[in-house]
Length: 626
Image 1 (tube, one colour):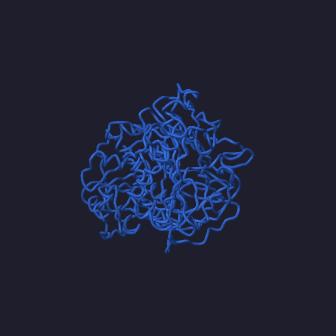
Image 2 (cartoon, rainbow, N blue to C red):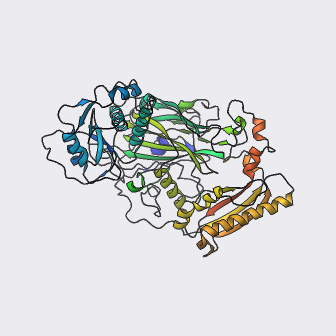
Image 3 (cartoon, rainbow, N blue to C red):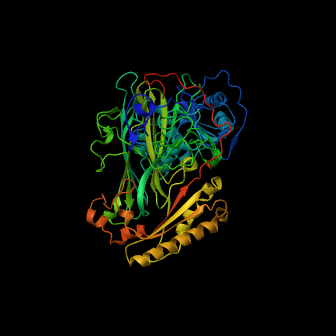
């Protein structure tokens, strides 16, 4: 995500291919977290509705951030913090399962964590709708916790040492810190080391805001390895940007599902930090996402930002991190096309962004992954042969000259097969020119928030092409490929006037006339499948448009700006083998029907009704505002 000077208003920097970025003032539209107070993070049942009144605790000092495991509350931040303080008052005891947790946590010391169970801890946890919670160096449990719950709360203690910040001082359902704590607890229960996971929140000796590089390799079973290589970049001078700089990479493994194009799709959330604890914060709109486009709202409303929807696991304030402004797709007119793929490039030579006056990023100089360092290098996994496996990578340099919190979900997605191999969750904060609370972890698949953000992108622009594959010399739509068509239900329901064009292709085996006929039969069968699922699309301006069969194609493995060429980059790979069009690994992706979508003029999503809470943009000048 381009959050350096070019995106937030000072200079030049990362841009999408062939496009100039512009700077726009940020528009507050949200309230979030507490600032200086320590967090309160709770472990609760998501089905619990917390509505209990707060006990009288006027004489008790407030605690800060509350991290629960994990539910919802109708209490305001102050009442919740008073309740949490009541639950950890008095002397505590050693953390349950301390020895097992410490063995897994390694250098992250939990010997001083004070645990509270029963009595006031039970009352507080119940009032908060929580099985347990963490605040500062204390944890509270409604009863005797199991190992997973105890380890989850201990992970929150480590997070809080690193200086995390939470919305209104309260952890939120499904936020990055909760998912990280669950991943840590899972490792503890499995008897594995959780130290690498905890290292992503900083050093193990305590103290907040430790600056460090995010460098890790994390395997996801059956998918591949996710690599993050980011360095922290403090502000070089007052008013300059601070942030992160480097690469993300995904390398598929043998046995992973095949895909002809694997690329990173990234969603981002950037919020201001309140001047005083508990004060208002706002969504920050980067220069590539004007505030007019970046409204929050439910699906069917035209803004590009997600809205909080705890019932469906959606966190508000995330948007698809692509170059919205200046795109030839015309983002100011909903209904035009813009690929959801991450599309920023490194700082051009001679322009000073976070990466400095150099073409390559500081976190991956010279193409750390053996690829030309550009913004989004797609990969593929065409078979288990190393020649048919190429890693996907992306470069990012998020930063800001003011105080802000950044969260990202970077998903390695098989664009043609609709497979989400996994997600790198990462983020950090900027405080007075320093980088704080850097963190990253990996989960399989993708989140409900990611899916919602992509649906909003499709509604605002248009759905990306959908590819239906066929067996050799077959024209039938298999059950697995038919799922891709069925998955269009939500999109077509919100955009009933969308037009679809179908283009069919065959591989190079057989003569030209036969393959034209075969590709046309494939088009006909895809059209039949669409009308079987969605009979209504047959009415009103004939939304299903026949494209026709085009016969032989070799384009699936031809190198283009949107598609990687046939060259694997794994040990033992061969460029000649990877590009050989006579091989089934390559021919299979030419047997396809591509569905492309277009929105007739004036058929974009409905106008929003009272979405967001915009406020005047912060005073700026010289990079003071986003």
